[in-house]
Length: 308
Image (cartoon, rainbow, N blue to C red; front, side):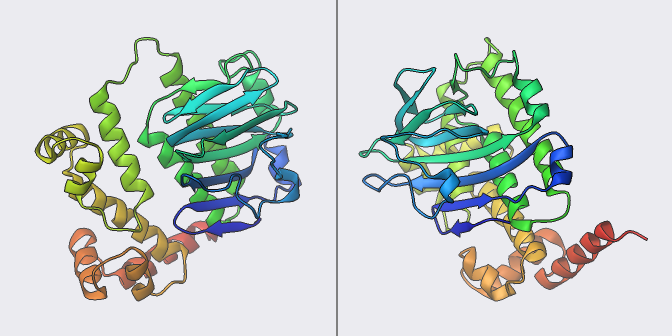
């Protein structure tokens, strides 16, 4: 596993790919998320030399990349594409062997998700497909499912288990299918309501380690809370507070099974008011105490890894 940097706004992985992974025909080299605040330097440091990036000089990589912007705006230029503005909800498609550069605007910053990949299966898939150099900026809108796929790829990279590359391949194919479904369906056009709810869901995902007040979230989106609560529940099946609680529980389960952090540390990391509150809420919603869930999850994982 390669280098990782993780805080409230940065997470990235550079992956080691072996000969067995390459025999599969497609593999992921890197996956990451960056939240660039207005006025911050870009790109961030601590990336490997092979990924060194100077926005004035640009760069050429050997891999494909998908770069998805969920907040802010910036500029993109490549050998095939004159300078264009990239805003929230757009996805950049980068091709191997092609020069390009991109950056967020200083006054807005941006949030970006990215995944870098290569392999003969990908070459065959992309050849003559909808992903082409003539259309490197795709309008996909704010889509929580796509954000979830990026986050899932980050989780798989963090776990670093056997056959992770095969798992990545499934995630990557799902991403491409989803992007195709959105960008090529001419009848598909998300309205303002859909975009506001999708934005709210993405903000919840990106702030799962914090506490979100649904009323403050509605204010941030410039909509009334009563309307937001009703439409959000109609759209997702959950009230905003319950939806955010479910996101926290999902992250809790992942941390219990995949990390060695103590129950107290996990409760603190996820910003629960107290360890006791954390225990009570987890037991109420899952039927297990955190310790029971951790033991059960690890036993199940061990059985899958070492079947008799």
